[in-house]
Image (cartoon, rainbow, N blue to C red; front, side, top):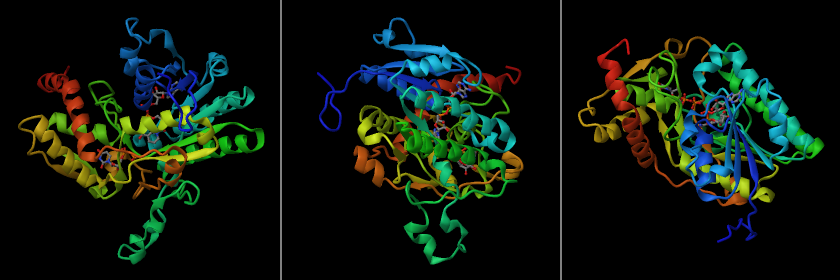
Length: 382
Ligand code: NAD
Ligand code: UDP
């Protein structure tokens, strides 16, 4: 049966160039594209590890997906691949906070300079671009500058983040945490200006803490021993190893977590409804799933206790951001997405409560890593 867009028109199959398409989000998007659509994917990344299961010759979609091991910093094949696709989705980035203050140059190059040719090739060839930015472009909330007991802190106008209204509030230069947000903001502005002056057909996506299976890595197992992934993988690593979950600066910062499977449904709507998505900037998150990092840790301990018997007595420990991330770290205090625009344009809403998405994700983490962790713990040289 033909698939229809939101306006009842038949969706024609297209070829999509997914840059950084073998990372966490890209791998889920490729799965959805292969299993539920007739679109073709040209995947560009430096590694195919997270999509090897989609590249098997035996898969029914094997003629619709190809992988190109390319570093977009220095490979002339990029231009040809973008220009031979109907749509480019750029996901490539350094996007783990531990890198922002310790590798600020790599962070700025990756999130701003390396993305410029992608934008240029799309403009030159009149091809659509869906660019992955971040909710971090909002930085800190306006309310965070009010005294702690000020009543306006409870007023949504002081903390809800709206694409077309909220300012971008970053810390001073010495707080290099903001190198990422600033680079992402600059590429957003470049894309917006290309749309304005040269007619580039673009969509900007601002993900709000999408989480789920295959996110990042477990240090010492499928990533560097000293590496610091995002909070889901940090806390998973602590749970798997039976050690206290580390709360940075008291674990008081707040996040809204969105299940990856819900989020990629929003991206598919953008792909298949260009008239509704072009020229838009979309918050994509789950405003109903807000927790402090302390609450997240407690919930993960509780959920993991049901999955791995005997692990429910785990605790948390406070660490300073300087000890955990080094100098120059700073934090977003609170991130609640306003959903008006994505609702109006695409009718999308997130579905999965935090408890449910943690159950699925921690079951995956346990099944994928617990044996290797056991082996590593019983033999420290492993
Ligand atoms: P990820 O690190 O899993 O994926 C990024 C992919 O880009 C990786 O596979 C990496 O190998 C690839 N890549 C990086 N530099 C490259 C280069 N020079 N050449 C080729 N490939 C390169 O991260 P993710 O969570 O999937 O995020 C994807 C995008 O979404 C990023 O732009 C990120 O900033 C944005 N984002 C994600 C979240 C989230 O909740 N996961 C939140 C905010 C923003
Ligand atoms: N965090 C924490 N313990 C950890 C890792 C992260 O308390 O082991 C905190 C971090 O300081 C931030 C929040 O968790 O306040 C979310 O961090 P993440 O790395 O997922 O990325 P962010 O949402 O800041 O982009």
